[in-house]
Image (cartoon, one colour):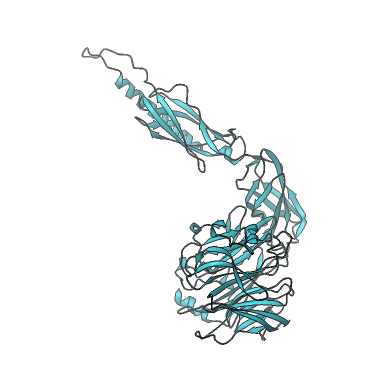
Length: 602
């Protein structure tokens, strides 16, 4: 397998579009490159990307889908003591699009400010040599100049970097005139690979990676805009002020690129990892992560040194990157790797929303919940039909909105075949009890829509409760009802939590508990009707349900009635204990039959 992969990679002349599987609702085009591509950025004043390619910064022309022969700015052949130099990090000032900032990667500590004099020509304005501080710039970015961003942050140039290999990773404020770097925040790790993204509110997103090339889990974190704004001219933001969005336990490693977008009322992180050169899509409202694109050559397949990714850039911050929406936003992903034994693979991939499916004449709700729990994920099913009422099997995408006092969160843009359109991962956050409806609109054609029937929103389950039976005797059947309650103590009678699985077991006691196990609640009540304990004494029963705290119930069993004494054939009398155990045997037989009946109904 490795030999085959190596041979395939060495065939650089052929198109290698099979590297990434095509995501639903998006087109994918691959443009193989003779030279490797590093960092990439979108030109806010034009219609093209710029990237590090073939010894300099070159424009990737989206009309010809190729790099221009003339470099905007050429990298020097070498910077001693290294034998090579290349640019990885660049940013164009959105408010002054001719101002182009770029830094060297690797062992080099130098930043340039360029002035574009044409689409493929620039002059050097100024440079900053960070040799004295040893600052290694990993990522450059501009803070959006929007009214939603704190005034002190608007339009600022920032970067992530570390003052030398093994030094703490930090966020730096870059003076756009002098290029002087001032610490803005402590990332809280060393050897940071340095992805950086900024949302429309001015919050910063970056990674706390382990030592580069390590397989240890990476944390994705967010620094609040208000704290970052206060740090300008003040004390840097401490690493402890960042919120962890993706914990190390998620087992992501070497996050190479990062972008943040607002889409259909939600905020999403797109980030690239070295494993399979994948790009993941992380919903910040729900914490759910889905794989947007996936390549091959992952560590899980044994290709430890091949699993490498590149940079990513969106052509716009506009909310039109929905699948099958016909939107104009493009995602460019650079990929470049050369490893001994595997050969070379160099390409740029461009993803674009597919056109709207104009054959869709109507949408229909085929399945929906009658009730949902506030803050608990749920799903609905839709069907797309043509003008003749026939279900459409080709690609269809919809976006959802809610009519209610709360907020609909999650992956509200989906794309599936029309006759199996499952809209899942939805979460409604409101103030129960209330009634809502959901409206699904065809992406790119919002006039085609459908609204669900009313959906009741109830409070989610918070705990379990049960009242001990009035009297329990050993070897005698008794029943127990367990209530699924919300945070106010009310029994949940609607939504998925009203049908929770509840498990009853023995925690401690002088003898066995029979008839326990797991039952499904009905209208928030789980009933265990065939219970028996084997001897008198004090018991503790444990009640549990997934995601809720366990509940313990003390129980005291009295002595069962003694069987009547009778004269034996030898003139002696029994004590009644034999009769008790015979009674237990009879009860066991009854319980076995009851359990079999219950299982047959499940």
